[in-house]
Amino acid sequence: MRSASVRVLVPALVLIAALLGWEMLVRFAQIPHYILPAPSLIGMTLWANLGSLAQSWLFTIKITVGALLLAALLGAALAALFASSWLIEVALFPFAIVLQVTPIVAIAPLILIYVDSTTAALLICAWIVAFFPVLSNTVVGLRSADPNLRDLFTIYRASRWQRLRLLLVPSALPYFLAGLKIAGGLSLIGAVVAEFTAGAAGRETGLASRILEASFRTEIPKMFAALVLVSLTGIGIFLLFGWLTRLLIGRWHQGSR
Amino acid sequence: MMRGSLVLEALGKQFDAGTKALEQVSLRVEPGAFVSLLGPSGCGKSTLLRIVAGLESSTQGSLRFEGDGGESQAPALSFVFQEPTLMPWASVFDNVWLPLRLAGRSRQQCAAQIQAVLATVGLAEFSKALPHELSGGMKMRVSIARALVSQPSLLLMDEPFAALDEITRERLDDDLLAWWRDQALTALFVTHSVFEAVYLSQQVIVLSARPGRILARFEIDAPYPRGDAFRGSPQYAALCAQVAAALRAGSEPR
Figure 1 (spheres, chains in turn purple, red):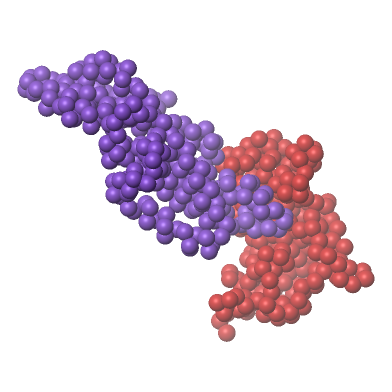
Figure 2 (tube, each protein chain N blue to C red; figure 1 turned 135 degrees about the vertical axis):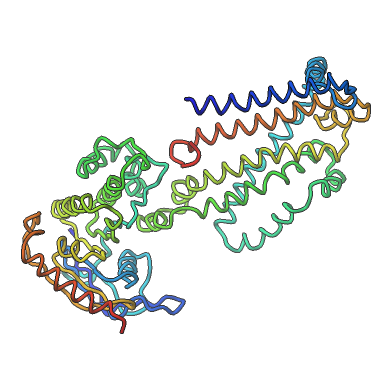
């Protein structure tokens, strides 16, 4: 399809043009690499340090994916609980909002004090940032079921379980997936920000630590190289959820095709 | 066939907010009858249907099903809404399967039954289609197939064809009458169209503006099948005029 290829080609051309412009700017203006490295130098640095960076990359991905899975599971479970009882929602929703509106950099140091394992602390931080969109979207989604269909389930004497499985869950699925798409980006942000706060060092460190470390040594090209990997992770998550959404609900849900 | 009659006695409904929807509605629907409830928008006719379906309760009077020897249980009933009300994620087949599925019957057990109902409504070829791939009229046919598949004895319909174009609506009216006769259904049909009520029913009940009270009852004494001959007859025109006059009288502000 023409529109599909245009959708890929045009941004790709813009990216190439921007990189070329950047490269030329650095070369002609003779900007030193410790201020702004050229894309070619960033590429070479990335290649040269791939071995050690890959280890950190894997760690960041582990935290991000772990937090995302927790956000999906706990967000959906909590949403189901909220949807089943008005009182539980009234009792707990304000606390979910408090967690959401408190900046993660403000809570992260506390969590790092209370939780022994740095990995677990990072996971908790990333989860706190990621879970709210899943929760609030799924709550709305579970309520979005067609009222007439609800009546129909009542007329045919559906059990609670049948109602949940055959009506509420499919109705909530588009909302849940939209929440997950936002949570994907947020869990990466959470993982990186928490690691900045933790200032972790040692074997088990992610890309944020590498960026910090490179910044202390003014290895600017290496900072950019790690940054490229963070961006690639975010793009990967975004594409993955776009694909998952089309796979699960693209056939019937308008706007997901 | 519904074994007992549906009997409403001095039924009234007042919502919690204080609005009165229905007042002193007394009505008897015999097994196998086709009865239409006709009234202006907001007269409580949909509320009446929902009370019969057990989706809402009345606040006054009583509703019961009367068998030969006294009170009998509520019959198996189906409900057709103004919108097709299909599950957008499920195929035509799965949508029609729903009532049987909720009763615990597997896909294989009822495959033949579902295909038969789809053939009845003229959608045998479309069992794998998704709702958004169908036209408005076809969606409504799926909705009716879903209502018929559980072999109800009482079919409740809430302005089912109001959103369809004239031609599609007339065809569905004719088909509905055929299905009603074939399956010995008892039909309670809510509409705001005088012509549709007179064309379909054995009895037309005219309700007043809110709170809905019964203003008039008309027996439509014409044999089935009714076709274009009936639609063009002087009897039909005269009945429509009478019913419309009664409706107009009840819609004027008191």
